[in-house]
Length: 263
Ligand code: ADP
Ligand code: MG
Image (cartoon, rainbow, N blue to C red; front, side, top):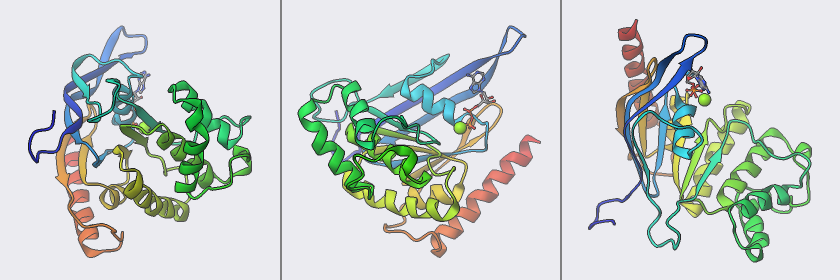
């Protein structure tokens, strides 16, 4: 239960350890080492780290897709929800839509899986498509849409289940730079309205600084968190603002000093 003015946490991870087997050797390698982090309810938290450091593995553990070998992962249900089981939505690097289903049925598919009453489907589809700027696309098919529009459908599908927690794994990294920039602005606007708790993974520091309330920086082999930064730059933000650029520069320097220390 939340106490006083203290923010209640949505995700608490304490000393998480995750190993994968080394093929053919009968041994394990440690991919995540002693990872501890908290994500407070309603906050946008990013994890930034180089490719291959274990970011997707961490999200998969939180989503319950991967097991883990030590520590604890606790997902706290949002205050007031009747069911004790928190709802987690996941947006991947690629949209992962079912191309043989209409946009509407792609969303209905997850609503059904999440046991959302059928009577609410139409409203949830319309509301969330409108939110991502795709009102009226219900009957269209994914392959008629651009990459950016497909990723918008994936975001609408994720928000439609009214998640307690939204996990996003480099959702804009497959888009061209101009579309990605527009999507970041739009995501900020969407979140003003939907306000889920977000754990966002990226290798792009400037994206993380622009979007986040808090950033955890990860180094590699094994992945550990070497720094946490809280960002209280007011919104709406502009990626070119000097406060954003200055923070980015500082964080890039921190990254290099850690990478160099690792050799
Ligand atoms: P990131 O998302 O940061 O790029 P990943 O979490 O995908 O990194 O991968 C972290 C490390 O774990 C990599 O070395 C990758 O090869 C390894 N890995 C990921 N998934 C598996 C798996 N299912 N089995 C064995 N090794 C894996
Ligand atoms: Mg990844």
